[in-house]
Image 1 (cartoon, one colour):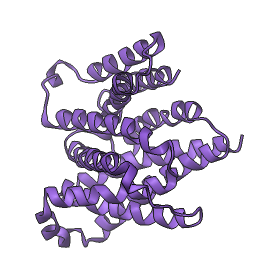
Image 2 (cartoon, one colour; image 1 turned 90 degrees about the vertical axis):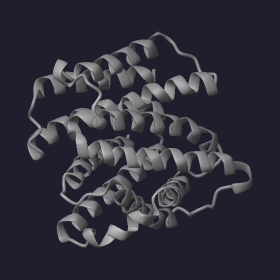
Image 3 (cartoon, one colour; image 1 turned 120 degrees about the vertical axis):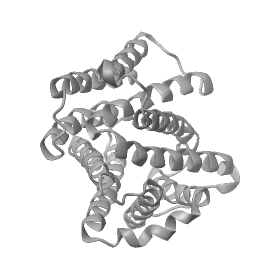
Amino acid sequence: MTWIIFAFIVVFTQSLTNLFQRKLMKEKDSNPILTSIIFLFLVTIFTFIYSLFNGFVLPNFEKFTLNLIIGAILYGLSVIFTFKASQKIPASELVIISAFGSVIAIIAAVFILKETFGMFKIIGSFLIISSTIFIYDKKKTKINIGILYAILMTICSGLAVVNDTFILKSYDPISYMVVMSFLPIIVISLINPKAYLSIHKYFKLKTIKNILFLSFSQAIQGSCYYIALSLGANASQIAPISRASIIVTVLLASVFLKERDHLIKKIICAVLVTIGVILLVK
């Protein structure tokens, strides 16, 4: 079971990604649009270098043109909303809300892919939704802009996962990771081309260091996920293990980002959400 080592690397690096994401966006001159572009560009480079050892393959544009466009738009928006949400709400709360994307993906798969929605998925969805609501006390139940961005992120990422299934049935996953890291850059650049005008603000050692760590961590996380699959693991095995990153993120955020408000409540919600996601893949 060598693959389980890579599965745990996925958990750790995903948690680090969540922390560096929040740390980067707490900086005074942080720009979600430009950060998204730089982040995706660096992830593209890191994953492309890795893909060269496995043989990079271009996608069948004639067959998947529409899916690639849809994926680029959904992932582009998802990354933007992720960084915007990271500016407004703690990493420990964002990672719990992000699990709602699994519910979106399941619901979309039921209607689009005609998958079944059994009792385990109903219970899992209930745990995720109820925990997401419970994480906020009565004073926070107003939908602030940070929560709104987080919800939009989960919707886009959940739908993107469903779109991925059409392409990954007949396309190399590592090559797909490279392509789907690059194409959203084009989408984001078209949405706000003026974002490049503030790139000089990123020429600071602290900012460069954080975004490099963030991008490298994301590239490692994605690569290890696919390595684990290639070593014999099933997606149904890795998915529940990788969701442990929710709990790890909450704990690490309390230590390194000092996010200790309502810590017990966050830990309870993180555990319930993790159980909910595990039930979704049953």
